[in-house]
Image 1 (cartoon, rainbow, N blue to C red):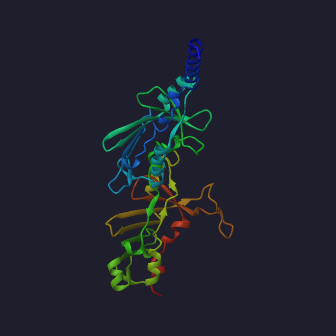
Image 2 (image 1 turned 135 degrees about the vertical axis):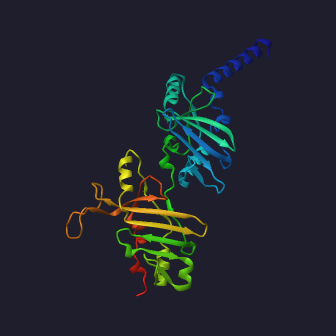
Image 3 (image 1 turned 30 degrees about the horizontal axis):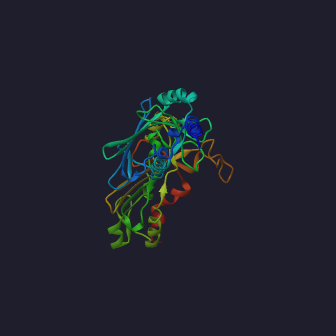
Length: 339
């Protein structure tokens, strides 16, 4: 091979490599960047702070028992925090946003994006701005703080966008859990019917074990059906609310008005761990969405027979619960007495 041929050979190789670099831009799509937005060690994540331009802020903090709390108040829904942590772990770069769309994407992120700070201990290990869905609806606009490069982020195998997992509504983070007790972990239980005092009763574990009795509304011991009481106590297992009403659905003045009404039932439960939980239940007026509108005689009902309003652990927010799940708790004293 003569000198000119050799030079021509190397020139072709250099030109081909240059064309590939310019057309493919491997620096934007290299595999090493695929996980740049992800947080692989989610077990070390201590808190997540999210905020938008409207001043809405959500602080999620891991507790010593590995539960989470939202805004230093309520326990977080376990399913939702696992979904968010899983999202942070699994999300990958799908592709960089084209230059023609970059200005629009950055403007959208600046105005409506969710600033998300992820901490390990007290150190912020990553700050991501989360936007809406990309035009193809398979990715989510995101940018790392300090960078102007916008990317479409996705989770391989999942079709859709990820923004709904970064929830900026405090009430949506609150756990739906109410009671989850075995019958032998209930130490004290008060079930009070304000409109029917004689139906009310108190269960005390020590008194019941020694005398087989409950207390009536006046504090007197009443012999109980042992098996019936144990069966009743077993009903305090795996009970969750349907959900909590937003303030734009259940207006603050309506909520305050409900709190002033006489409850249908009030329950106070203390367990062996020293925790006390409260449930206050109100009748729910019949509405257009109530499934059952008439009684067996064809008369229009006033109260929804399938659902109730509820207040859990004395918080202001109103929850919805179902008769199907909670109805077993609404036993009256005569139902539990020895025949």
